[in-house]
Length: 387
Image (cartoon, one colour):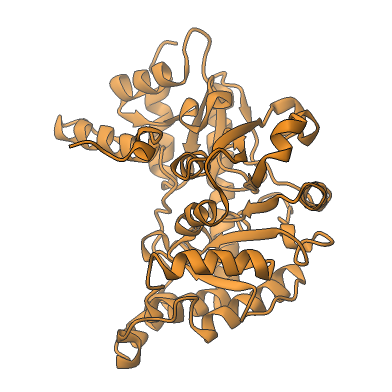
């Protein structure tokens, strides 16, 4: 059976491939330690689970949910934005609930991009940005995130003819996979660029709460003119509150952009289960201490991993945010051959940097979502490999 041509532009999803490789290795009896996928190992906090247990028994929540999210959830998001970022948002017109931020990120491309429109996406990147662009018939223009530029895109090198035909610009800070945290001055530059060129600017802020060393990640919506113009920000409860399987997130931003995203979603999905939204409210309202505890756990794991990498002679970036390490592969290897070596010789799985784009070649990514005992064991195994 022939598939739609749009799928010809869609490669296999990186993490599906990694999960398949892990499953195959386990079937061969290999003792696998995965450092590849950013899925928190610590469970969702009890206060969120308990709220869900109560909410799921409420028959009112068994009906179809509101398409944009229930009033209570959107109002909780608005309170969070005011408390966390000092940004005032209208929960009715400037907030929409999502089935996880990945869903919203994909749908914003479908809502805004026509055939042959350019989209400005980072490289390396969370693979969904380029993939969603290709599925809509857009033409991804990849903005290199280079070490010498602090892993921030240089807007000045984008060709003028590309800018003129661009509909959307995507960034992700705190960044997956590099661990970079952008500051408000950079966000202001992005917002100004979007206003000047009539481009919708999107920030994937899924790791907003995961930062280290006293750094506090801002929101792009704190930049002047962001809410009044074409700017939108995506959030997920997955990383902050260890709710990856719950599939709940939200988007906040300019009301016209939010309206277009809502229109797309109304014709594609039926919203987030209301009981899950009730649990999400509990996380947003009562989760600050849990976030602090998780950041301390990730900080400890980060420092252990960086110490081990240094002892083994690896070059790496010290992350300021998110829960990943971006590490250079040894000489004589590329991203995939080194990841394959580690899997074959040690059973340790890492994500090849090339899976995040061409600028990720020569790197691999380590996730810190694994207990310290296993993390130390993984590096012990790696130390036995000659490379």
